[in-house]
Amino acid sequence: MNISVVIPNYNGEDILRKNLPKVLSEIENYKNGKVEVIVVDDASVDGSIPVLKDFEEKYKNLKVYANIQ
Image 1 (spheres, rainbow, N blue to C red):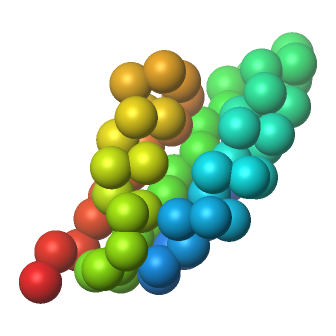
Image 2: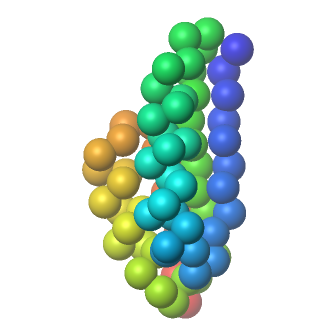
């Protein structure tokens, strides 16, 4: 079974730094199909976007969509 995990974000830089690596490392162990993590940012004004872009470079199964104002 393929799985998509969708995470909404708004100014969640600290939460992303703390929890996103845990989510991404856990899905690497999934063997029954493909897994992707999608983070949708709603025009955050903190450092969420740079954090997400760094994670996106490290993890191939992470996709980031950002609404920029």
